Structures are given as structure tokens and as C-alpha cells.
Length: 253
Image (cartoon, rainbow, N blue to C red):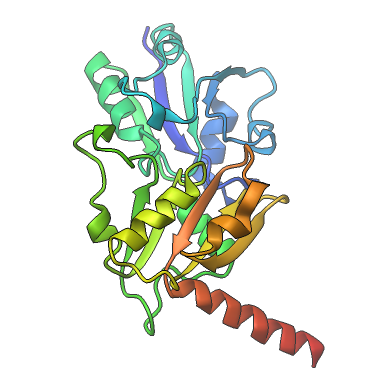
């Protein structure tokens, strides 16, 4: 008897941002195989008797080994279990959900992909940064900050294109923040371009640091810890400051 594996987006961290379908599958799962970034508040929504498997790993950019579905996930599915592969954000946005779906299909295991609020969308909304805005940006690009070297592989980003303009969201850029921001300046983005570092977006411990490409890394300093963080670059970051100023004025009125 073969079970199934559902690739489910856990969203950016706030349990209230789970989709109805994600919650339904989570509560019905025999096994919850989860990423390290999924908070306990979301795991607690699973059935009390569901088996928990910690299968996600971080800092994948430091290895050239292919990212594969964890063997325990296939093992449970082949044993007839209903497995929820719970992935932070959205499974198909820097979540390796595509690779895992390919392996499930090759193994003949039924699966469903359930979208989640991505880290970029959650962080932007939670910090009042519009990723697009008619006055300053009509396009947005998601990229990873891991691929800083030619050895990163054929799928690495074109940093010249990333620096060209519009809104840029860098995932996994915090550990090499100064290098990532410096690379954009080297490829022509103005050093005065607004940028924001957002840690633990939508969670109670959310933290935001705003600066420019030239000084954001220094402003963040030693705040970089184990919490997930991403970087938003572009004039849209200045819109947040306008909104905060307007809200403060209204509050004082």
C-alpha cells in the first residue's frame, strides 16, 4: 500500500497566514516532515499523534551535492502513511519543492503541492514595503544570495541583470550581506539605493533594519543570528518610511 506526500507551504512564520488547505492537510497527516525554519507554533497545529520528522537543512549553498527528498519521507509514504512535507514559505520558491516533486513522480508516489505565502510576500506586507509601486517600480525579482562564485552552478544569477533596477528580493543573503550588496554596486546599482534587512518576518520577534546598499551591512552589524532573513533592495523601501511617517503623524494628531 502506497501513501502520499503533500508538499505544503507553511508561509513566512505566522500561523494565521497558513492557507485553509494547508491547515486541513496538516491536521490529517500521519507524518509531518518539516524544515528547520518552520516554527513550533505551526507544528503544534498537527494532530497530537502525528509523527514529527525534522528533515530540512539550512545553508545548502555551501555544498554541491544535489538536494534530494529525505529518504524517511519516501519510506513513510511507501509504508502507506500520509505525509505532509512542510516547507517554509512556498514550496516552489527557493524551497526545492520542484526537485522533491520530480522525485516523488519518479517514485510513483501521489502528491499535491499546496502554495504558501512566500517569505518575500510575507516580509513585504509585514513591513509595509510594496514590492511594486507605480511611482518607482513596475517589476520585482527574487534571487538567492548564495551564488556569489562561478562554482555556484549553471543556475546562478546574472548579477548584472539583478543590479539593473526594479525591486530585488534576496533570499539567503544575510550571511554574506556585505558581499551581496557590494556585488550590486559593482554591477552598477547606485550605492544610495534604499535597502532593508528583514529578520523573522511576521513573527513576534520580527526585526527590520533600513539603510542603503552602502551602509545596510554596517547597520545590521551583529544582529544576524539563526532567524530567517531576507533583503529587499529598491526605491520601494523608501515608501515604507513614508508610510511610517504618515502613520506617526496621524497617531499624534
